[in-house]
Length: 458
Image 1 (tube, rainbow, N blue to C red):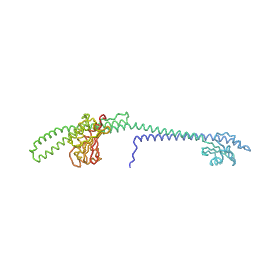
Image 2: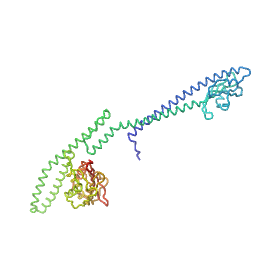
Image 3: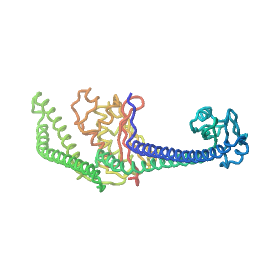
Image 4: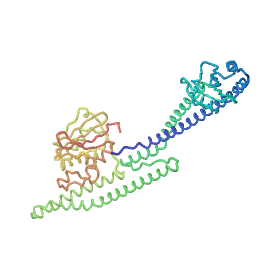
């Protein structure tokens, strides 16, 4: 199973967001760690200086024959939150009951008692503290000072919250910038996609405007050059088909006239000659229809056959088209909502649409069963149903392409038709701003639907 990839715009937004997140998180962590190291280091240096100053006073007291530790400890000036403890000859003296021997980390006690100055961060009753232990010079003892870092911890928490908030804001800003940049960068691609869809729909005069960006203009110029080349090629092919079809009309007219002359003396011909005349007449008529279809298709592609629009009633249009197709006996059902509807169409083209659908049903769909006219919202639909095998799903789009014949026609082995009838239907309907499609008929068969806008919706 292939996992679908994110769209280009989402990837651009994601890249900006992740980049902003990584950068802001890195800067936030670096800022916090530097500030933390600086503040704790400053506090440690200050406490060490205070400790050594206090050690000097305590050392002077030890020079007396009867040192009075409680008096000396109470006379020491220490910052708020700091407590001092003295170990002398296995005896402990504290200036406050808040911190005693057991509150000092064991590693600090052992190192200082062994003659090594030491400092350590630890937590005492859930509050961060800093302990400094210094051996007393020339004595069997050590001096300890323990300072609460609660205020510093609150400061660091506030700093951590501040840099985390700044990182979140920066990440959000990165997402906003990524969204803006994605829209701006992908706008030319979206325009190119819309233009390509328009070209695919037959609007070959679509061109992209220059963006003023040197890199994006390469895409714009390449697309415009491709569209121009495609338009030129289609126009050349249309002109070629038009010229060839026009040149064929004269000899075909001569052939048709000659056949009519021979038909007038049909009784004088032998039986084999009559059979040959019938085959010749059928092929000439089919050839004439093919040439006429090619001429009409080439005129539409060349844009020289503009529609002549006029208001008509759908029911009257359909009835006239059925009579033209020699199918006046086909049931015509008009929905109540469609009886008073007016549509603006080229009558000749729309009659040709219905005639072609009727002939297609007669030739490949077992005959027309009914023609229904329906109105819904701002659209009018002509639905022609036949009694044939229906149109397979994989052919419902292709049968409206030029020179494509459906599976039913191939299965019947019929050589009638050029594959242009439904293509002309699609072109005529497109010119009117509508659409045509094939679907299944309830109970079997095919249902061809032509949908057109009502008056004033064009």
